[in-house]
Image (tube, rainbow, N blue to C red; front, side, top):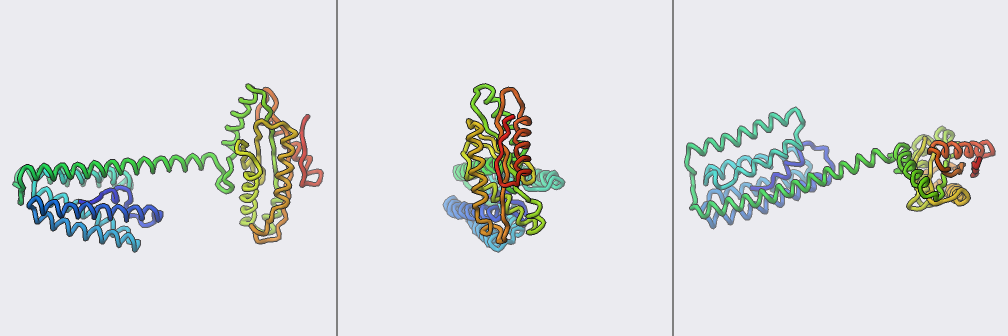
Length: 353
């Protein structure tokens, strides 16, 4: 019979990711292997017509495999769906409803729900239901064309049931993984800045508030750094926004390399970065800020931007105070940063008032 998991997950669209279609190719290989097993099973059970039907099925899956290999994805999906629909009908008509070939049709239900556009899903499901019922009703009025003995029919039924059970298990696992990956991607998009990969402002605020609550309970010091790239607008104007983006991404990498795993780093504004340093007093936070400033100053920017861009940064340093909100600590760091800018830039300033 073959594998409807290909059709169940891959639709007929041709713009999917490469790994999407590589998985489809593996499914056609598995389906062809199942049909080879069917060939020998039906020869042994005395149903040569169905045995040779499976040869045709293997040929269709081989065609689907090479269509996928040549990126003719629509053709591949048509071959796979045609094989399952025709094979199910032939199996039922030849040896009877009790063979269990109709189980394979049920696998199109998740296929349609997952891959079909919403406006076509209802029509497709209704058509599948009509096809399924038509085969059932047909077998009320006719006898199997090539019946096999009851024991052989039970063997075929159990074989089909086992294959479909395995397919549904595989599909369920695949769909679950797909949902989990999608959830993780959405969560990443919701919590990180897409250019730098750092925390975005919204998620940083959430995590910083949690850190402040912990500080209010334990009293352990928490340092706050607000870092800004000097003359960033001039960099964009002179070298272009692509270079500006490269600068921002590289600064983010430097921050990750210079800070500890437990430190929180975010892109706070256009070229501003907010850093929260748990268990770090203001003096140690100043040392961290100075280390970052020097690392950015010493970085070989030509290796990234292929330009003569020269980059410096200024930073303001403060720390959490008991009972206050995050905005107060950030405001103090911002005042220190402003003094650093006014004092010539490329420097670290503390705000203790």
